[in-house]
Image (cartoon, rainbow, N blue to C red):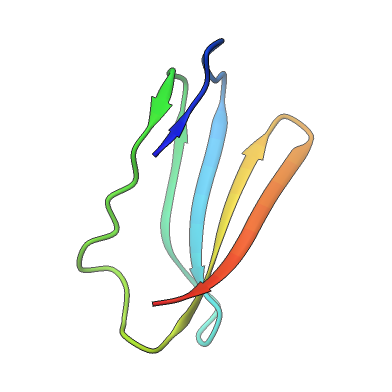
Length: 65
């Protein structure tokens, strides 16, 4: 869950499988709260990158499921 007191305008969120380079989730939001449900999209033991783009700012983090 990602929240903002001022709300988000045109936020892009994506999740990429780093083993296959496949984007398994991608969506845009304009809201105060973003909740991601990745159930059934992740494979155990594989590495992923969560990327959040807000205007010119890109935030990302890698994780293993």
